[in-house]
Image (cartoon, rainbow, N blue to C red; front, side, top):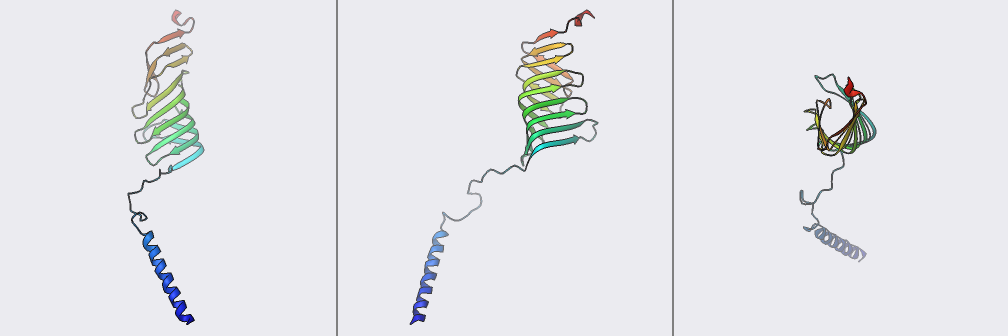
Length: 183
């Protein structure tokens, strides 16, 4: 008699288990690829206190990038926080936040930017877009350029040949050093 009762309990447990499995395999609980919204992917790489070196083939110019924080996504976008870029030709850029598209070689800096050239010029601006392939950069916001020969202020600026030539426009004002025009 105990054997029959134990057998009935086992069969009853199996039936309840099968019913429970059937309910859990309903259409609302099945996993199908592509129907669920995927969570955003984490960055490919993230690091702090970074120093990167770049030397392009066929060029003597090297670039050293220092940043407090670097995040690189799988789409080849690199985000730099509190950074400094130094080229071996004397060009230096410093800023708080930048986004670099490695595929397009396009650097977009938001917020305050300081550009220093090898010949002593310093440009203070707010935001900059630099196409490293064409060696051209621009800002559509006011900037101040200061050097030994004076200070120039303008509403916007374009830089060519890795910042060796500049075109200023929009309410340009200059304050030249005393005696500059007497030579």
